[in-house]
Length: 273
Ligand code: HPA
Image (cartoon, rainbow, N blue to C red; front, side):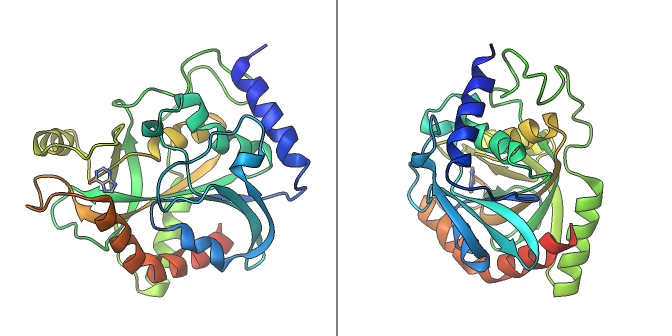
């Protein structure tokens, strides 16, 4: 048997004892963005700690629960608080919730995060639609025995972020008058912020924004054939681009300020998927 699959199945069975809700779209809320869960018409809430074998988030400002409900008419599952590699979890555990949401029925996945801006002109409060990502600085969640029932051994990653979702996201933003920048997200392990030299490297590699999540989740989701969209809220300028030292508080404050626009964008987008 495959240990990752066994763990996924036992989490699935445990969750199904608590809810029979069938989501179409899954949403992961990043740092400071968890308040979006208040926008949905809630049907069920399941705490991560009540799911067998589930990793539990330890980051301040991150609640750890699945919220099931509706955005307008669309059935959604929302992760209010994600699992980060820097918390010390095995990378397979980091993506367990993503796999679980797919097994629950979700076909679309919208990933959100707070990120440091690298690209010229990026400023705190900007929204960046993720067009592609760099994950090579973080272990791959696909290493190890492949779970054939989830996806193939050597999945294609040439178009991780679904082109139709990208178009829809641009339409949603333009209807609302929200400016959507575009770019490449690079994931580092964290929990430390980067050095200026690391950010110069990331920029030379083509990264537009930097963070500590999302890309491995997108990789696991792509492996399973989900349609993926990604949005970064730029919470700060990356190390060395701004002269200020970076702090988690700064990230949360910027995310709080962006929250009203972020809510509008998601509420417009999700029913359009
Ligand atoms: N670096 C890494 N992760 C982050 C940042 C950053 O500057 N801002 C928010 N998450």
